[in-house]
Image (tube, rainbow, N blue to C red; front, side, top):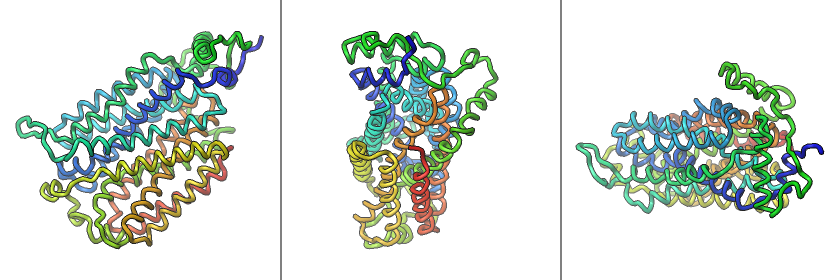
Length: 484
């Protein structure tokens, strides 16, 4: 009897308890990643106050994790295809947990900045493997829905950090002092941000390796045993009862033996080149453009949300007029200790932002019942472009806040849908490499966007905001050319 395609086997198995645990574990990893990379922007005001940072230094702070992910992103993508999703997640989460905990005790800014860069370097392996891991245990039919559910956890990541900071209380309070070094409450908040990572790290020890990865490296018997065990748990019968005696998948790697003996740089090159040859070249380049644009707007501008929001007074002016007339110490670009701690940090808007992200993902889940991904992404980006454009004119604080949040939220919510298309386009043995290189390029655009905001927003506010609007519009147009 011929071997059965693994995607057909996943349809037979369905989605049961073990896959639900996998989803929750990957979800905790997503929350942990959001806490470590984007969550630091929630603390940025308090950190900038303590270290008296300039705008440029604040840009370095918010981008340190992204820079670490960019530097090591492609390497971890290649490595996850080589050693497996589960092993990479364990190495990545464990290393980033240790580094993040150490960073809490750093008394000097540039020491802290170096540790945040290291956190980003380590955590990029989990960000690459996490998405592939849950997708490779999901039937094609329900894959878009599971991808959207992973977005729920990304939204929880947006909610977790500001909510925690809000309940901990004032960031200026000192827990205790070591000599002249004050341990403030924001450090406790950063420490507690690691909790989801600890839970995921423990849970990953009881979960199996990706069956599709095992097939891609020739371990078909082990892959069969894992899927057979899942079938027994989900359906109460083994795979033989459904006529499945062995499994396979298309586009299997033919040269997995001796991979580790090849020159590292040569092997990374050989794994990457197929992505830029037919039939993958056109969809990969298009997906890279869309992903980069969404990162540019959603995470690049979003990384400044808390700091921009903190500087918006209750006046009837456009957002650019507010920044021009009321930005604190904008001439010098520096915080002063007095002005910092006298101005309370409002974290509720950060929680609101996360709740809106969660609400959008819930709407996407409902829309996927009737609509395909392209239509949903087109709708999201059309509304996002409109919200960004009207920021040029509206002058009511509530409407500005709503338009600003919708602008960055709707672009952010497109990211998992784009990543899902990447998983559909490329085979298993180069999937990690494909996801990593696309997201690495996208993260570069996040850093560029954040630096542009930090360096030029005050001097050229309308121009900068409309560049972001133009990028969102370009993403909207590019989606028409994506594969189904």
